[in-house]
Length: 111
Length: 118
Image (cartoon, rainbow over all chains, first blue to last red; front, top):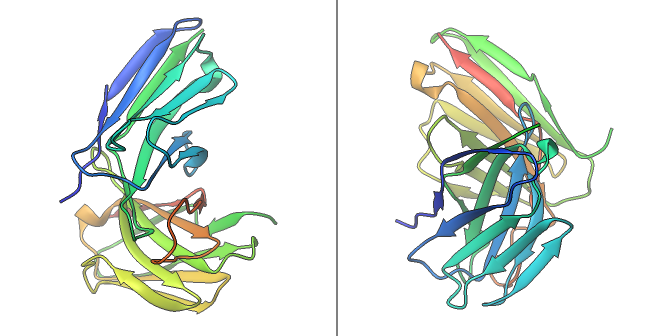
């Protein structure tokens, strides 16, 4: 059974701090996505990475796909209260569009 | 309306009731999905419809019955549910569900239907 483990599960930080969220698996993925879900809403796609070692930046968010395409990280610089939410990674193995979602990281940024 | 719309947003039902969840997408997508989101568990894929044809059923109990009359609408019919079925049910759509192509498939989610089974 494929499993995407995210760490940490919960994170509470002060505004302005930096943080990194990890997404790890023993499976190789052809593509990996990161979503953010705010309370009362569905997940919203942040980024998709498809190449091993790929780095993508979205304003203060930096996403990296591991060289072996088994893991990914999300780094947030100078976190803001608006970054609060549940961060989910989701990976699809080669030959399928079936995305397996990670266990999630719940982030709270305090003003 | 734009995006993916789910109704009702909240539903409370008894174990003997029959109810339905509705999902509508205005994105011109051809694939629609039902996911279950429970506390302390990863998002679970339940069903996938591609061009109105069911392509995935992840061993979901028969008390959940999906229906996809066209590419824009998706229903989840509920009957004789159990308290452990209480969860947030999310509908999503994507351009296509394609087993052959590699690369990314972007899911657009609705806001979900929060179901409580008493």
